[in-house]
Image (cartoon, rainbow, N blue to C red):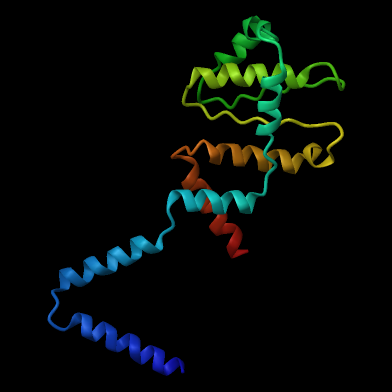
Length: 173
């Protein structure tokens, strides 16, 4: 059966090559190779499924809907926040908001995220909401995977080649 399939394939190639210009053959091969490569959207989906992060965007959106207008706007005016925000774009910046349950960390974080998203700069913005009564959101690995998913969702040109390399290296192990 395999021999028959190989024979059919050889005959198909021969039929295609008879009377065809080499340039036409090369162009057909290139077209088939291009079709074989996954689109960026397919690659994003594949990476997201592989990473398996927790999406906390719903938490963010729910908080924005339920907070009072003007809540937490004071934080972006603090000198400490301004210094953090003004750091060089080449520096990695991490803003870690922590405290006891019920002290407003989620509302404060959502306000800061909204402020940064409205600025629309080129720096990737990744966030994650830990929830005290939701164990999976308190797992450090889940947080890292979710940050990767957020980076992917921003569809930065620099992220795909890196993720391709990581994915290929991981699948070789």
